[in-house]
Picture 1 (tube, helix red, strand yellow):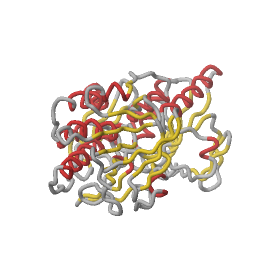
Picture 2 (tube, rainbow, N blue to C red; picture 1 turned 120 degrees about the vertical axis):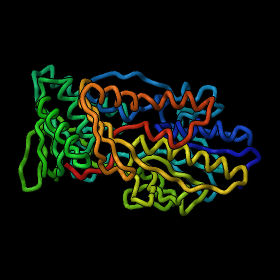
Picture 3 (cartoon, rainbow, N blue to C red; picture 1 turned 135 degrees about the horizontal axis):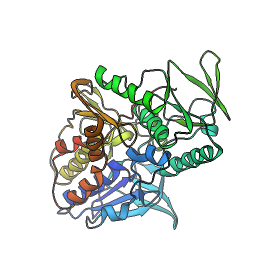
Picture 4 (tube, rainbow, N blue to C red; picture 1 turned 90 degrees about the vertical axis):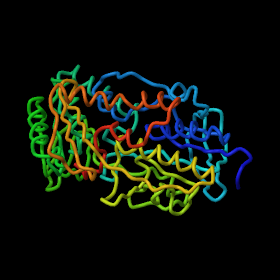
Length: 399
């Protein structure tokens, strides 16, 4: 059912959700559309900085209403608990009670959550799923430091795990930090960048164990494949990202990881009035499948918003095209490595290290809020946004 005032509901206020809402508000202004952004908290979560918060740091905080100010987009604080794609309604639980939000188009930007299928993870491990979980881990690290030390394990040798391990080791030198994973840290990078990354972890005192698969998490230890039990005082789980269950429960077609399967324009293949973006979407290109990064997320969000605007004007949607350019990885606050890539994210010839890489990484990490502000007043080309964002969140089977 088409409403008298076209209504677009955006579920999720992360990088892609806010970008979608800001872009939609600008591109649908002439159509008189109503854009509503729904998120459980009014604080904007910078996922690229959660490892800093987990290490006990306090990066600058942003509020979603402030990021939307001047755009015309509305903010609703609440959690979407059900989507009815046939009736085009989303049920939201808010501090003021439950409400139904009808829509003409829905942008599904709820992100992903850490995969916790290994026994004991939910009960005994910490994650980087939110600011709150990161702060909870920081409190545990502070407690261990006050006691004089302890062993901290990071499960998952992907770039999220690498950044977390380096940050913890630098911020808490009294703690013994172990990085557990099947693969070598930085395995997707070129030889030079991978060697620099490993050298920096060694310098920071991070013990790296490759070929280590965590099969069970205990209250004070992890059990590895082969039966070894390794005592740990705290465990951070970064091994794998899956889609939230909301899409599957709504009857949207999802892939094996719970992400919404989309067509070339980013519309759901089962329900074309729903557009999925960021970690919540299974997006394929000619060279393969896009994996979750802010680098790909912002262009995806922009394309989805532009496509909805085109459809409201009666124009034909265009296919989404994207290619990666870099893999920026922080290694504490004083070191970093940047692997420049081919469009399919395979390593290119060049990498950047040291102080120059630190400046580069901080520039791209801090760019999204600046882009939101600029997007209130100008239409930024989608291709320019791929220079934002950072590390890969591609799933890495634990450890």
